[in-house]
Image (cartoon, rainbow, N blue to C red; front, top):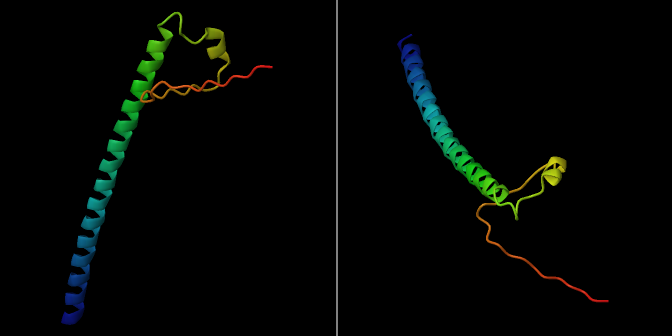
Length: 90
């Protein structure tokens, strides 16, 4: 009878310890997710700022009728200007 009680006590302690370890691992994962969400939110804010800046320049803004037809807009705030010139003559 005593050995059964000792076994139950050891098992209970192990179960509590395992629960604490899993809870701490879950909190660490939640903190990682919060950091990722904060970084993505900041990136989205920067993209919105770039788009607003572009639209406030009359000569370079995207035409409104084109925006009304658009299904999506991609803005990459960290991209440096670049371009390729491809030409042909007949």
